Length: 231
Length: 320
Image (cartoon, rainbow over all chains, first blue to last red; front, side, top):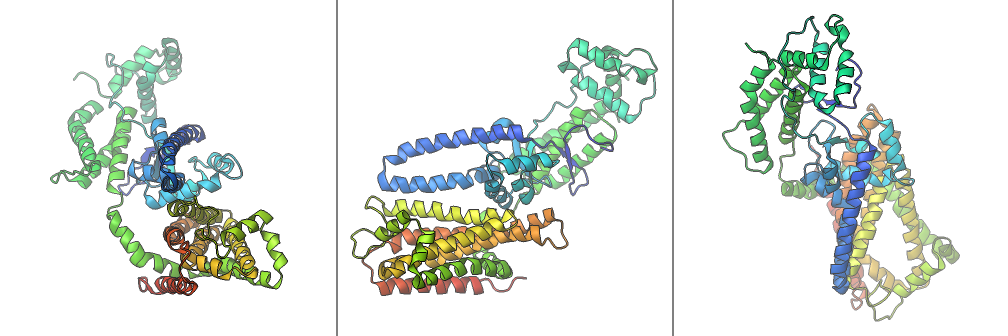
């Protein structure tokens, strides 16, 4: 946390004094989510239009009321009642939260969605896009005013996804960050090709006293560091 | 304690915490489970896991649980119906009085331009053509032509009451929402929409008065004029709060001032939206009835003005 983070994660302060970590979502996944919502709404309008069109003036009146509600309150209802996610956001794994990590409430959701009309200015969400790119938290204008964030809704991860290997005590004394780097490497090693794994592992050679580090040896160290040693 | 033992020892508690979170989310809490204490313990474990540099996977798992717990603990507790009731009984009229400065500015811009246009057209009828296109004035003239069998304010018989209700609600409330959102452009959007709507409504009223459609036009608009015009002014006032935050943030940063004023503005907008709903209802189901004598329509309209002003100026007492 001391050095400038390489990732876009944010640390939200909580009353318990333990910062919560969230990853704000950028313009592209949000555009996809918005498009999904747009299509979904279009579909609902079309179905309503067909159903209510047959009911004459009464149907037209209801249709106009529902169109009005859909234009302004569709995102609000979903964000407040469905844990911060419209169907589009849900499918993209996004959700809206408050700046302090609390769930988004009626006022904040109303504000961010009413101000959408300013984010859309002058055309194609230009203001919103500029605002997102200028802000560290990818906030459009509505988010800044409402005090909300759109974040990735990361699923609960496995508690210890380090591949098993015979635990070996690292041959040199490693400080906290170095231990952390080795453990992180081990956690991700299953996603890498064997060549890339060894290539990355060699970078750690200076850490262990100049001998060439292999992926296998780093996995063994990671197992030791994370406590998988036989007593 | 190393990570394996730490996990082995506390994993049951974390799993129980996750299970209880699900119960709480469904609104079926188990009474014997002390949720705040469990959340504190979880936060403690998270802090320990971070300071001991346990694996990212474990820290991440605890972070997700802590975030979910945090969201559960700090959500709004008061039931919605009570908050809504209190809003209309007390909070909304108090808010209008508390924010009287922006309300007065918005009202002056809107009603000022409306009345100025209305009066100016009586003196110089040509002026109406400066604001209304020929097709607009022709349309207004058919809608309010005296002695027509149609319902008032309609262009043809197919426009039923309920359809017009939907139309008025959508149209007018959207105008109100634009007045609010436009405030984010340093208040200019709100000022623009207030003046534009004031001049347009003033031109229509002025034109129809000048050509002598007095009883049809004024009889039609009298009923819903109080809620509708007030709602436009209040929406503009809500937008001006956003502009105020940008132009005169005072001792706060602009960002903080915006957040604070938006909270005020959006509440005022809820009140305005309610008035728009009321106006659309009156306009569709009362104002349009053709047979009612002019005097009754005007009396009802003026009574609504009196009631609305009384509500906004007196209901709810003094704020704390």
